[in-house]
Length: 273
Ligand code: PLP
Image (cartoon, rainbow, N blue to C red; front, side, top):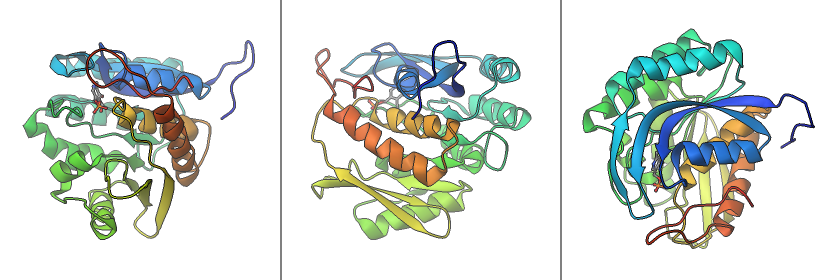
């Protein structure tokens, strides 16, 4: 993706998500990725997590009206050409984000495309949303998605489908599309059944497949956020959804190759390659 020249204002994107005190996932992954993709990242903090490489110890939610106010404040002044949601912990936050997105022209069918990463839990299984927010993820958030990017655990929680092979992946992509997302992605990275990692993209009509070699590393913290942020970055540069996903798939593969050890648990993928 093109980087801006000295003094030139770069394209802008907005992430509405949670922080990671360990610096690997969430907003830190988003801003690192966007910066490397030639995108100025605006940030609406929706939660502050207390976490390190071992796990999530807790989180503090930002009041819904403060989350929405951050979005309104930057869109009106700075302007963004793509947006992304990550950790939105409660129904009240999801509803506030949905409302401000509609108001500011962000989301499916509106001026600014929206990548919805329906973050539910960390890779360690620590919850990042309240269980009762799953309904709002299904009924309020996903219908606003230009692209929705759940991992396999999130697909199980949201659709009830256990993805184990290609037919179940296709069923899951269809179920996510039926919830209202314009495009759905089923990420095969966590399906350890082949030497490649295949992501399936679906728009209600055709399935597109994106395959890269599987990178086996325990240091994949923040991988989902990084993929979604790379898609948002490419969309901000004006790429189509299939082009953006193709770009992001190559991008995350590099980030996994360059991932590093950190602390005593799982290190992060590395967007700074
Ligand atoms: N923390 C925050 C704030 C996140 O948004 C995410 C991403 O989904 C995670 C943690 C979990 O990252 P991982 O599952 O890669 O450990």
